Image (cartoon, rainbow, N blue to C red; front, side):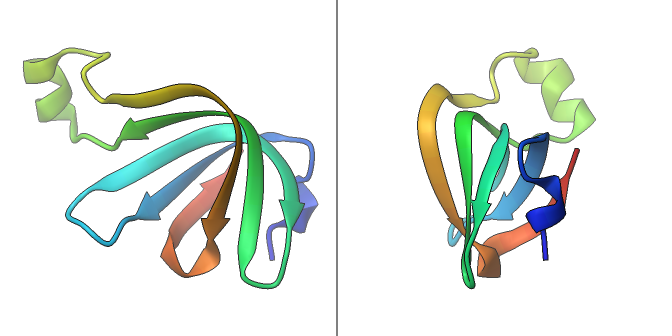
Length: 81
């Protein structure tokens, strides 16, 4: 499904089980039947433009420089370069 992006830097939008939508930016490294793996990952809360104006540009950062992340495909909204 996403394997064509292997080795590319991608942005993955993920709906969490909570109310937050998360944005993962990392290098696409592997795809399996129900998961994808990213390396060198930064994670941010996805904020609307009005929220970014109020809270500032870096307020949405959740984590930076994570070595490896595995994401369940059931929660992926989009995966693009």
